[in-house]
Length: 300
Image 1 (tube, one colour):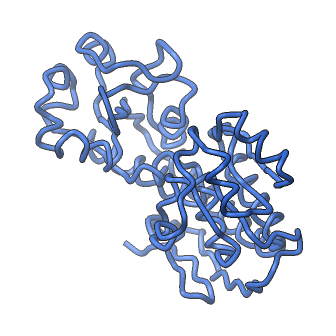
Image 2 (cartoon, one colour):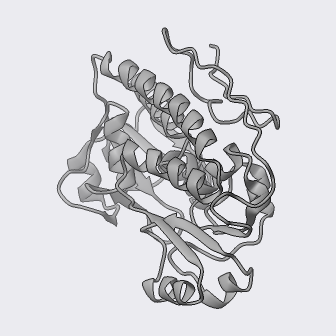
Protein backbone atom coordinates (compact mmCIF):
# COMPACT_ATOMS: atom_id res chain seq x y z
CA UNK A 1 0.00 0.00 0.00
CA UNK A 2 1.23 3.46 -0.82
CA UNK A 3 1.82 5.98 1.91
CA UNK A 4 1.15 9.67 2.24
CA UNK A 5 4.43 11.46 2.76
CA UNK A 6 4.65 15.17 3.43
CA UNK A 7 8.01 16.25 2.08
CA UNK A 8 9.88 19.33 3.04
CA UNK A 9 12.91 21.11 1.67
CA UNK A 10 15.08 19.89 4.53
CA UNK A 11 14.34 16.27 3.71
CA UNK A 12 12.19 15.58 6.78
CA UNK A 13 9.53 13.14 5.49
CA UNK A 14 8.05 11.42 8.49
CA UNK A 15 4.71 13.13 9.04
CA UNK A 16 2.47 10.95 6.91
CA UNK A 17 4.61 7.84 6.96
CA UNK A 18 1.91 5.65 8.51
CA UNK A 19 -1.11 7.08 6.71
CA UNK A 20 -2.25 4.81 3.90
CA UNK A 21 -3.27 6.66 0.74
CA UNK A 22 -7.00 7.13 0.50
CA UNK A 23 -9.11 7.70 -2.63
CA UNK A 24 -9.50 11.42 -3.23
CA UNK A 25 -6.84 12.31 -0.68
CA UNK A 26 -3.79 13.39 -2.64
CA UNK A 27 -1.75 15.84 -0.65
CA UNK A 28 0.76 18.14 -2.31
CA UNK A 29 4.30 18.20 -0.96
CA UNK A 30 4.96 20.75 1.76
CA UNK A 31 8.09 22.75 1.07
CA UNK A 32 9.00 25.01 3.97
CA UNK A 33 11.77 27.54 3.64
CA UNK A 34 11.63 29.30 6.98
CA UNK A 35 14.60 31.37 8.07
CA UNK A 36 16.73 29.95 10.90
CA UNK A 37 17.04 33.43 12.39
CA UNK A 38 14.96 34.87 15.22
CA UNK A 39 11.22 34.51 14.78
CA UNK A 40 8.82 37.32 13.98
CA UNK A 41 7.43 36.80 17.48
CA UNK A 42 10.83 37.74 18.87
CA UNK A 43 11.64 34.21 19.99
CA UNK A 44 15.33 33.32 19.85
CA UNK A 45 15.42 30.60 22.50
CA UNK A 46 12.43 28.25 22.71
CA UNK A 47 11.65 25.43 25.16
CA UNK A 48 8.95 22.88 24.29
CA UNK A 49 7.13 21.00 27.06
CA UNK A 50 5.18 18.70 24.72
CA UNK A 51 6.25 15.95 22.36
CA UNK A 52 3.50 16.96 19.93
CA UNK A 53 4.56 20.61 19.92
CA UNK A 54 8.17 19.58 19.42
CA UNK A 55 7.17 17.59 16.34
CA UNK A 56 5.50 20.68 14.91
CA UNK A 57 8.63 22.76 15.59
CA UNK A 58 10.62 20.36 13.41
CA UNK A 59 7.94 20.24 10.71
CA UNK A 60 8.10 24.03 10.48
CA UNK A 61 11.90 23.90 10.26
CA UNK A 62 12.17 25.98 13.43
CA UNK A 63 14.42 23.62 15.38
CA UNK A 64 17.26 26.15 15.34
CA UNK A 65 15.24 28.07 17.95
CA UNK A 66 14.85 25.02 20.20
CA UNK A 67 17.13 25.06 23.22
CA UNK A 68 15.33 22.47 25.36
CA UNK A 69 12.48 19.96 25.47
CA UNK A 70 10.71 17.74 27.98
CA UNK A 71 11.24 13.99 28.21
CA UNK A 72 8.15 13.23 26.08
CA UNK A 73 9.84 14.89 23.10
CA UNK A 74 11.24 11.80 21.43
CA UNK A 75 10.23 12.32 17.80
CA UNK A 76 11.80 12.97 15.41
CA UNK A 77 15.01 11.33 16.55
CA UNK A 78 16.87 14.64 16.53
CA UNK A 79 14.64 15.81 19.40
CA UNK A 80 16.24 13.20 21.65
CA UNK A 81 19.52 15.08 21.42
CA UNK A 82 18.10 18.34 22.77
CA UNK A 83 18.67 19.46 26.36
CA UNK A 84 15.99 17.90 28.59
CA UNK A 85 14.13 19.88 31.25
CA UNK A 86 12.47 16.86 32.89
CA UNK A 87 9.05 15.24 32.83
CA UNK A 88 6.28 17.60 31.75
CA UNK A 89 4.29 17.25 35.00
CA UNK A 90 7.33 17.54 37.29
CA UNK A 91 9.26 20.51 35.98
CA UNK A 92 11.93 22.48 37.79
CA UNK A 93 12.07 26.25 37.31
CA UNK A 94 15.82 26.34 37.95
CA UNK A 95 16.64 23.75 35.31
CA UNK A 96 14.37 25.29 32.73
CA UNK A 97 15.48 28.88 33.33
CA UNK A 98 19.12 27.81 33.12
CA UNK A 99 18.55 27.42 29.36
CA UNK A 100 17.67 31.15 29.21
CA UNK A 101 14.53 30.78 27.08
CA UNK A 102 12.45 33.75 26.03
CA UNK A 103 9.44 31.54 25.23
CA UNK A 104 8.05 28.26 26.55
CA UNK A 105 5.32 26.26 24.79
CA UNK A 106 3.37 23.35 26.24
CA UNK A 107 -0.08 22.06 27.11
CA UNK A 108 -2.28 22.42 30.16
CA UNK A 109 -0.76 19.15 31.39
CA UNK A 110 2.53 20.93 32.16
CA UNK A 111 3.30 21.66 35.75
CA UNK A 112 3.36 22.03 38.63
CA UNK A 113 1.59 25.41 38.33
CA UNK A 114 3.93 27.06 40.83
CA UNK A 115 6.87 26.32 38.52
CA UNK A 116 5.08 27.85 35.53
CA UNK A 117 4.35 30.94 37.63
CA UNK A 118 8.05 31.22 38.49
CA UNK A 119 8.92 31.03 34.81
CA UNK A 120 6.43 33.77 33.95
CA UNK A 121 7.74 35.98 36.75
CA UNK A 122 11.20 35.60 35.27
CA UNK A 123 9.90 37.35 32.15
CA UNK A 124 9.54 34.26 29.97
CA UNK A 125 6.48 34.08 27.70
CA UNK A 126 4.51 30.86 28.42
CA UNK A 127 1.94 29.58 25.91
CA UNK A 128 -0.15 26.56 26.91
CA UNK A 129 -2.63 24.67 24.72
CA UNK A 130 -5.61 23.15 26.58
CA UNK A 131 -5.45 19.32 26.50
CA UNK A 132 -8.91 18.47 25.14
CA UNK A 133 -8.04 15.27 23.28
CA UNK A 134 -9.69 16.34 20.04
CA UNK A 135 -8.70 17.52 16.57
CA UNK A 136 -9.08 21.16 17.60
CA UNK A 137 -6.25 20.60 20.07
CA UNK A 138 -3.96 19.48 17.25
CA UNK A 139 -4.95 22.50 15.16
CA UNK A 140 -4.22 24.87 18.02
CA UNK A 141 -0.82 23.28 18.61
CA UNK A 142 0.17 23.97 15.01
CA UNK A 143 -1.05 27.56 15.26
CA UNK A 144 0.77 28.20 18.55
CA UNK A 145 4.08 26.91 17.19
CA UNK A 146 3.60 28.96 14.03
CA UNK A 147 2.96 32.09 16.07
CA UNK A 148 5.78 31.57 18.57
CA UNK A 149 8.36 30.77 15.89
CA UNK A 150 7.28 33.47 13.45
CA UNK A 151 6.19 30.89 10.89
CA UNK A 152 2.45 31.47 10.82
CA UNK A 153 2.19 31.19 7.04
CA UNK A 154 4.02 27.87 7.00
CA UNK A 155 1.85 26.70 9.89
CA UNK A 156 -1.25 27.47 7.83
CA UNK A 157 0.10 25.34 4.95
CA UNK A 158 0.90 22.49 7.31
CA UNK A 159 -2.50 22.73 8.94
CA UNK A 160 -4.27 22.54 5.58
CA UNK A 161 -2.48 19.28 4.83
CA UNK A 162 -3.16 17.86 8.27
CA UNK A 163 -6.84 18.76 7.97
CA UNK A 164 -6.97 16.92 4.63
CA UNK A 165 -5.37 13.86 6.21
CA UNK A 166 -7.77 13.99 9.13
CA UNK A 167 -10.84 14.28 6.90
CA UNK A 168 -9.67 11.37 4.78
CA UNK A 169 -9.03 9.10 7.75
CA UNK A 170 -12.36 9.97 9.38
CA UNK A 171 -14.16 9.21 6.11
CA UNK A 172 -12.44 5.83 6.03
CA UNK A 173 -13.45 5.11 9.64
CA UNK A 174 -17.06 6.08 8.95
CA UNK A 175 -17.37 3.37 6.27
CA UNK A 176 -16.58 0.53 8.66
CA UNK A 177 -19.44 -1.86 9.43
CA UNK A 178 -17.92 -3.09 12.69
CA UNK A 179 -16.92 -1.33 15.92
CA UNK A 180 -14.39 -3.53 17.74
CA UNK A 181 -14.52 -3.56 21.53
CA UNK A 182 -11.11 -2.26 22.65
CA UNK A 183 -9.29 -1.87 25.95
CA UNK A 184 -6.24 0.34 26.49
CA UNK A 185 -3.71 -0.76 29.10
CA UNK A 186 -1.18 1.75 30.46
CA UNK A 187 1.89 -0.02 31.79
CA UNK A 188 4.90 2.30 31.57
CA UNK A 189 5.72 1.88 35.26
CA UNK A 190 4.19 0.29 38.33
CA UNK A 191 1.01 -1.77 38.11
CA UNK A 192 -0.84 -1.79 34.77
CA UNK A 193 -3.92 0.42 34.57
CA UNK A 194 -6.86 0.57 32.18
CA UNK A 195 -8.19 3.74 30.55
CA UNK A 196 -11.72 4.94 31.15
CA UNK A 197 -13.59 8.03 29.99
CA UNK A 198 -11.90 11.42 29.73
CA UNK A 199 -8.50 10.04 28.72
CA UNK A 200 -6.47 10.50 25.56
CA UNK A 201 -6.76 6.75 25.01
CA UNK A 202 -10.55 6.90 25.19
CA UNK A 203 -10.64 9.69 22.61
CA UNK A 204 -8.29 7.81 20.30
CA UNK A 205 -10.38 4.64 20.55
CA UNK A 206 -13.54 6.54 19.59
CA UNK A 207 -11.87 8.37 16.70
CA UNK A 208 -10.66 5.00 15.39
CA UNK A 209 -14.24 3.74 15.15
CA UNK A 210 -13.93 1.43 18.13
CA UNK A 211 -15.76 1.12 21.45
CA UNK A 212 -13.91 1.60 24.73
CA UNK A 213 -14.60 -1.56 26.74
CA UNK A 214 -14.29 0.53 29.92
CA UNK A 215 -17.04 3.14 30.37
CA UNK A 216 -17.82 2.74 34.08
CA UNK A 217 -15.35 5.38 35.28
CA UNK A 218 -13.14 8.30 34.25
CA UNK A 219 -9.36 8.30 34.19
CA UNK A 220 -7.18 5.29 34.89
CA UNK A 221 -7.69 2.48 37.39
CA UNK A 222 -5.71 -0.69 38.19
CA UNK A 223 -6.12 -3.64 35.86
CA UNK A 224 -7.97 -6.37 37.78
CA UNK A 225 -9.42 -9.74 36.87
CA UNK A 226 -12.92 -8.47 37.61
CA UNK A 227 -12.46 -5.43 35.37
CA UNK A 228 -11.12 -7.53 32.52
CA UNK A 229 -13.88 -10.10 32.72
CA UNK A 230 -16.65 -7.50 32.74
CA UNK A 231 -15.04 -5.35 30.03
CA UNK A 232 -14.70 -8.32 27.64
CA UNK A 233 -12.41 -6.57 25.12
CA UNK A 234 -11.88 -8.11 21.70
CA UNK A 235 -8.61 -6.20 21.22
CA UNK A 236 -6.04 -4.90 23.71
CA UNK A 237 -4.13 -1.68 22.96
CA UNK A 238 -0.83 -0.77 24.57
CA UNK A 239 2.23 1.34 23.83
CA UNK A 240 5.47 -0.23 22.66
CA UNK A 241 7.10 1.19 25.78
CA UNK A 242 4.42 -0.42 27.95
CA UNK A 243 4.93 -3.84 26.41
CA UNK A 244 8.69 -3.51 26.87
CA UNK A 245 8.17 -2.54 30.53
CA UNK A 246 6.14 -5.73 31.02
CA UNK A 247 8.83 -7.92 29.48
CA UNK A 248 7.58 -8.22 25.91
CA UNK A 249 4.43 -9.57 24.26
CA UNK A 250 4.91 -13.15 25.43
CA UNK A 251 5.23 -12.02 29.05
CA UNK A 252 2.27 -9.66 28.66
CA UNK A 253 -0.07 -12.48 27.66
CA UNK A 254 0.93 -14.58 30.68
CA UNK A 255 -0.97 -12.21 32.97
CA UNK A 256 -3.86 -14.31 34.31
CA UNK A 257 -6.50 -11.57 34.05
CA UNK A 258 -6.00 -11.39 30.27
CA UNK A 259 -7.03 -15.04 29.90
CA UNK A 260 -10.57 -13.98 30.82
CA UNK A 261 -10.96 -11.77 27.74
CA UNK A 262 -12.16 -12.52 24.18
CA UNK A 263 -8.85 -11.00 23.00
CA UNK A 264 -6.82 -13.76 24.64
CA UNK A 265 -7.34 -16.72 22.23
CA UNK A 266 -6.06 -14.68 19.26
CA UNK A 267 -3.58 -12.68 21.37
CA UNK A 268 -5.23 -9.63 19.75
CA UNK A 269 -2.84 -6.81 20.59
CA UNK A 270 -2.21 -3.45 18.89
CA UNK A 271 0.86 -1.45 19.91
CA UNK A 272 2.17 1.96 18.86
CA UNK A 273 4.91 4.19 20.23
CA UNK A 274 3.52 6.25 23.12
CA UNK A 275 3.89 9.75 21.67
CA UNK A 276 2.43 8.58 18.36
CA UNK A 277 -0.52 6.85 20.05
CA UNK A 278 -1.40 9.40 22.75
CA UNK A 279 0.42 12.61 21.86
CA UNK A 280 -2.42 14.25 19.90
CA UNK A 281 0.06 15.87 17.55
CA UNK A 282 0.57 15.99 13.78
CA UNK A 283 0.73 12.17 13.57
CA UNK A 284 -2.76 11.72 15.03
CA UNK A 285 -4.33 10.83 11.64
CA UNK A 286 -1.86 7.98 11.16
CA UNK A 287 -2.35 6.78 14.76
CA UNK A 288 -6.13 6.70 14.32
CA UNK A 289 -5.85 4.92 10.99
CA UNK A 290 -3.40 2.36 12.34
CA UNK A 291 -5.62 1.50 15.32
CA UNK A 292 -8.73 1.39 13.12
CA UNK A 293 -7.23 -0.97 10.55
CA UNK A 294 -5.42 -3.27 12.98
CA UNK A 295 -8.42 -3.60 15.29
CA UNK A 296 -10.64 -4.55 12.36
CA UNK A 297 -8.08 -7.12 11.23
CA UNK A 298 -8.18 -8.79 14.64
CA UNK A 299 -11.98 -9.12 14.70
CA UNK A 300 -12.41 -10.10 11.04
